[in-house]
Amino acid sequence: MSEAPDRNLALEIVRVTEAAAMGAARWVGRGDKEAADQAAVDGMRLMLDTVAMNGVVVIGEGEKDKAPMLYNGEQVGNGVGPDVDVAVDPLEGTRLAANGAPNAIAVIALAERGTMFFPGAAVYMDKIAVGAEGADAIDINRSPAENVRRVAEAKGVRPQDIAVVVLDRDRHESLVAELREVGAKVRLITDGDVAPAIAAAREGTGVEC
Image (cartoon, rainbow, N blue to C red):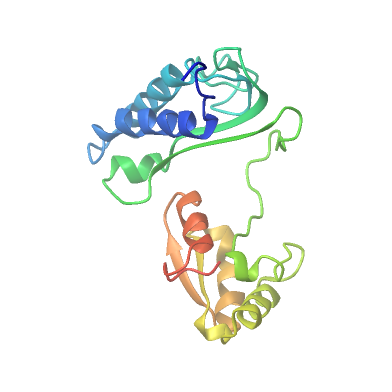
């Protein structure tokens, strides 16, 4: 070959999440979620410096005075390559990792510069995720019951066949009650909503929403 091949940005980002996961792995089940999170941050930040991109952290570990690495507004990447917005959560589900529970994962997302939504100081947000069959059926502005019925119709099943994952929080009592009223199966989780969202997008996981 007379020329070097183009670098695959997606594969480089896989290595970034791999470094974060490997850093946190030694803290799994040790009851120290802060140490697990810091190890993930350290691993992710180290590898990000090697990625061929000019990135800015839009959603990160916080502001600079509270998070020395991967803070909002931080420049990441080696400065050569596409201009991108970056969202990171080096260890999503810190308590899950500390307790040795499943579904703690390293998360990173990229988008063209200026296109990534910045939630600002929002603490809680309404979120919904489904697979390809239900993508055109859901609307976050509709009621949970209506979304369940529409997803069930799109999949050709009954509302009773729809399994919905919900964070087990007091603020979700009315949501859970409405989902059960329409007949959906509710699976309550203690932490970490990214892994269940991925499960909803995949076939054969037993999760629809």
